[in-house]
Image 1 (cartoon, rainbow, N blue to C red):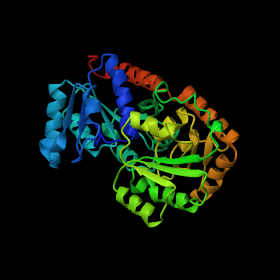
Image 2: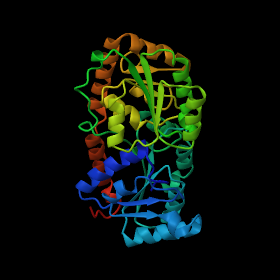
Image 3: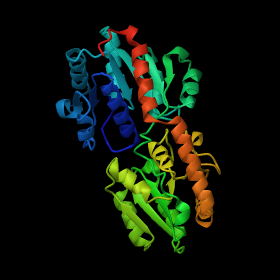
Length: 358
């Protein structure tokens, strides 16, 4: 269960995990509940057994949604229901316990105590049988909230290392200009206007180019900002289609910049680093586990971003070494094949909690 199948890191991660689960014989039902265009419907439709868009069936009537979910659970004889940032998940797990259904409720947490769904999950712990967190910080935060440690499993995010690779590219060979990119949803959380502010400050440097990729509620505002400030050094592309478009975008990128106000564990950072692209980012979420200062990029206050971009622009050997280090960290720790394997192991290890049908 997830609010929607929109373009973004969580959906790309879910897609990879579901593909591996399907290959291992699991039956998968996807459920969404927001009144929102499902941008990735076709991607998931090729993998899962069925997709239910609750809003189209029940509107915003919570009671009808719960009734429909109970019907889905019984019709498909569901063993596990996994909630990912879904308030509807919290409604249905209460009913599952009340009606004593033979279903394991799993809360998948992509953020720690600073995120709304983490706090909601804690409040509903009596109805949750297991937690899957994506970082060690989530484990620590759950334990601090008196969650039983044996209910917690940590599975790191992963990406397709064979697809997101750019090993043949040596950025020391092109010293004519440095391409600095922002890739993500253009929403308030990501603060894309901070990226444009950086580009504006550096627009007189003809050796720098700035790329923006993504769509969202702030797209028009970003476009207007570029026009208003006559930023000929900056291009915005709202049509970056996953996965080919993301890979093409990152192949044109020398440095990825993340200006986010808050993050969990952004997949785009892993994808960039897997393609030997170092990252400059704000110190939020769990970025510190992969963006290591002066090794795979730079992490810190946005006031220092201009300085760090200039370091890469002035010394391509540093750019190359940080990119190589970034690729090595992702290769060693964040392979989607390993992530999927651990999800398979999780479900099989919990099979004694319900009748196994996979």
